[in-house]
Image 1 (tube, rainbow, N blue to C red):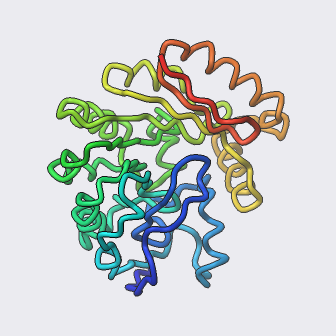
Image 2 (image 1 turned 180 degrees about the vertical axis):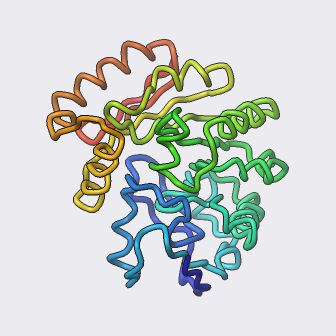
Length: 267
C-alpha cells in the first residue's frame, strides 16, 4: 500500500451525484479494494500507476480548508462519493473526524456513505447535526463472496450492528444496496435483516464499466457462476426495478439505476 500525504487545494466540491449539492472526499483511493468500484476512473486524474486499492493519497490539510462560508450553510454535503471516509487509514489520520468538527457550525444536510463501522467512533459529533443520515452499503450477505468483492471492508455482521447502534441513539440510517450484483446480491434478505433499524433504502445496479468488467467476469468464473452480458441487459434491470418497487412499496426508498429517472418513494 502506497500512502502519500498531499496538500489539497479545496475539499468541498460541487457534486456530480444524481442528488446533492457538494461532496467531500478526504482521501484519494480506497483501501477496501472493491473489484466493482466505479471510482477506479480516478486513476486517470491522479497519475497513479498502482492497481486500485493499493494507493492512498491523504489530503492532510483537508480540515483546514473548511471555513465558515455561508454558501455551504443548509446545503447537502455527501462524504464519501469516490472514497470511503472511514477506511482503515482514518484510524491514524482522523481527517473525517476533524472535518465533521468543522462542519457542525455550517449545519449542512449531511450524508455519509461507508462500508465501515468506524463511523461509530464519531457518534458524539454526528448527534450535533440537525440533519444527518449514515448509509451503509451492502453488496453480498455471503462473507466469503464479500471478501472477494470488497477485501478490506468490514463484515456484514458489523455493518448491521452499526446500523442498530446508530438508530438507537437517534441518528438516521440508510441501507445502500449497491451495487446489486446479478446472481449474488440478495436484496430482499438484506431488507429483512435491517428493516427494524433502517429509515431509508437506496438501490444502485452494477454497471459493467470497462475498468471493472474483466475483474467481475473473473470473479464469476472463479466461483463457478454462469454470467453473460444478457444477465446485465436493460431488460434485466427493468425487471429488477419493477420488483423493487413492488416489494418496497411500504418503505422509504430511492432507486439510482443508471437507466431510469430517480424517484423517491415515501411510505
